Length: 140
Image (cartoon, rainbow, N blue to C red):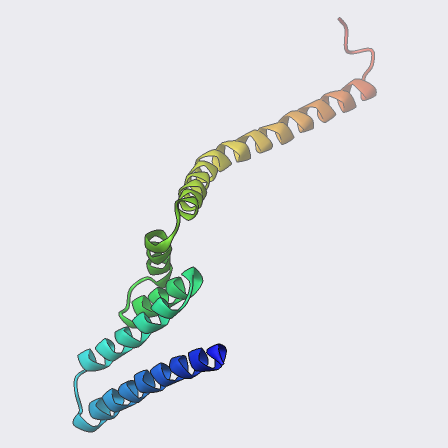
């Protein structure tokens, strides 16, 4: 009975909220409002979605909202995760950003070391091939 009452209450709230959105959309569609009214309605709906879900849903709603406004959805999602995240989530974001910076700084140096190692290997192979062809020419 308690579960039935809880589900009924949530369904009634959702129905009222949806009816309100439908009324607002009908008013906007009937009166030729500017896009500001549509943006406000979209923001209100996405805010409601963000508040009703978890961290991932909040980040997704913020990303969609940023996309609607012509901004970067990835950056908006990261900011939403940062604002709503626990200290562990924030530490993970800082760690991944630091790792990305270190990787970008170190990878060119690793590439140079890799290419130099191929040059050393090629020089050693050429030197051995030369010694095999002319064993008497090499004197120590």
